[in-house]
Length: 326
Image (cartoon, rainbow, N blue to C red; front, side):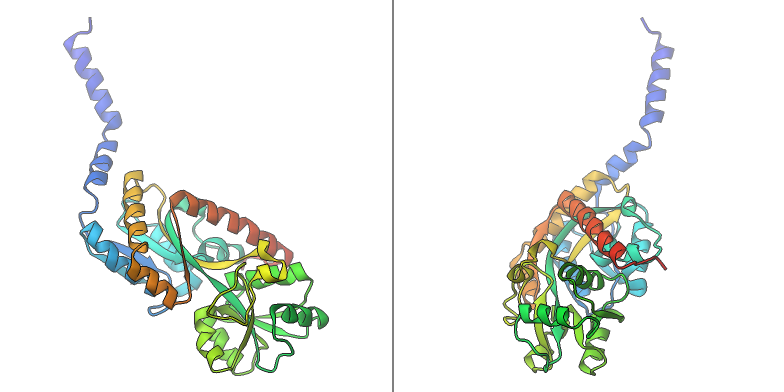
């Protein structure tokens, strides 16, 4: 029989071993007890910011706490991600980010984080990138566009979202597949690309659909090829990659919520459920449609798998064009 002193010693040892876990477990059950900050590594007013703010408004009702948006647009999204993933893993600092800083930018730049620095909470949907020619371009369909590029090696320039950006790699992925040589001109995002395209500084616009759509309506751009597999009703003249037999190399813009690595699983589960519920509301669905995006909700594990497979596919493209980290 154990003596009382021995029993007390064992209890003390067990308490010491489990002690650090108890506060975390208690905090998980009480979460959240203060405002939650969502770092958005993009400027205010852009698509990523618009989606983040709407989700924040809706999810406040479930979390019963304020959800504050903190815009950190520098570094092509990498600065904001770095700030968020280096925060305490307590669920009070998150990042709402588009895919480029997670899957593309790390291929072209030295960043302070890796996939092990964060954990995916959920993701909400996607929007195709699009390739648009000048109004006088000799072609009216996606296949015409491809045939023209193949017929004139280095005969055209294409503006993109910067070296190593998702649009840059998405377009190079297509050009590699069809055997076309097109000179890439890097800009600072879709807005800058569109401005130079409309000024005639570049032959082809490569960027987000929402940025160029008003100019398509004004007949200042002829959009012919999407980077998504499917067509998009907002651009009836543009063909999806399925229409030209390239649906297996789809690369699209998508958005997701991440938390620092080490965030307690119960907190991640809480956030996952709350944000999936918010993204499923009619008001959020309408907002996505207005922005030309398609709702496709993925949970934590599905988003983690998406990040991994996309990063692997884009690395093959980056290696193919000789992309090196700067």
